[in-house]
Image (cartoon, rainbow, N blue to C red; front, side, top):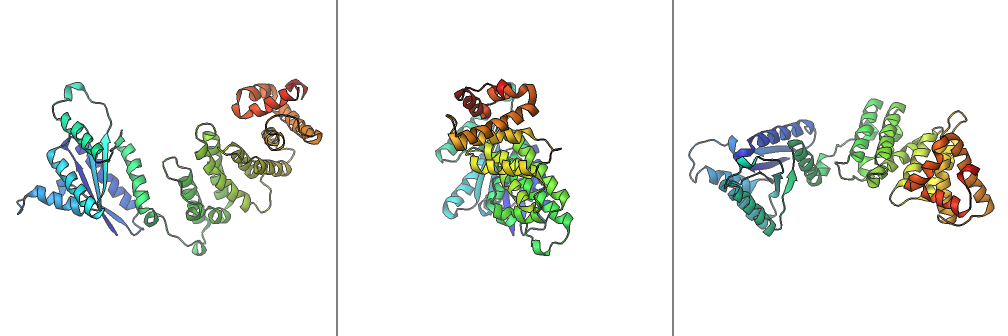
Length: 365
C-alpha cells in the first residue's frame, strides 16, 4: 500500500524539508516488511520544464491527489504554499482526503531578520483559526518526528503493527526481543496507550526466557519508580507487565514480582488497596530471611489503614496489632529516617495520622 505525502513549505525551511525526506526514507526502511510505503512529494523533485498549465498547477494537482498534505511554516507563508494548502483543503472538504497537517516551527529569530513577509505568517495563522484548524508547534526536527510519527500510528496503526504468529516462533531470542519491544511501546511517554490484546504481553512474557523476563521486569520497575510522583497514569502502565510476570511465575519464588505489582496498585491514581495488600502478603510470604524488604511491611500497613479504618479511627485489636507489628519491623530496617518518611512523604501521611489518632509515638514502635 502506497501512501503519498505532499510536503509544502517556504524556502526558509529547506533544511527541515530535507530532514523530513530523510525521516520518511528511514521509516520505509524500518517498515519494509509491512504492507505500507510512504512516498513523499516535494516541489524540488518536479521536472523544471514547461507544462500546459504551468508547474504550479502540476504541484496543485499532486497536492489534491495525495493521501496526506503536510505543511511546515515559520516566519512566512509564500503565496504558492498557501495556494497548495487551499487546493488540498478544498479537496478535503469534498472527499475527506487528503488528511491535512500543518506544523509551525516555534523557534528563536533575530529581530533584524524580521521583514514585512512575517505578515503572511500571521494572516495564515488567522485563516487557519477561522477554519477551526490549528497548527501543531514543533521546536526541532526531532520534536516534529515524534509528533508526526504519532499521527501516522493513529492512522495506520493496524497496518504498521508487526504481524506475527506466536505459535510458529520457536526461538527464545525472538520471543524475548518481541516482549522487550512491546513493553517499550507500552511504557514510552511518546506513544498512545495500546490495548493489551494488541501487545499480547501475557503470551510473550509467559514464553520469554529468564533473561527476557528479567529485562521487562527491570523496564517496568524503572518506569514505576521514575513516574510514581510525576505521572501516575504512565506509572500505572507497569501494572499489566507485573501481572504478566506474576502469572508466568509458576513456582511463586520471585517475591519482587508480587511486591512491585503491589506498589503499583497502591500508587496508581485510583488505588486498589485490597489487591495491593494481597500482593504484599504474597511477597512477604515468599521472601526469605536473607532477602529483607522493609517497605513491604511499611506499605502493607498503609493498605491496612485504608481497608480497615478508612484512614482514621481505631480498628479492632487484632488489626491494630498487625499494623503496629508491620510498622515496628519497617522501622528497624529503615532506621533513623523512619519518622521523617512518615511526615514528609504525602503518600505516607495516612500512617502518621493513624498513629496520632491512636496516640502512638513512632518512638514506641
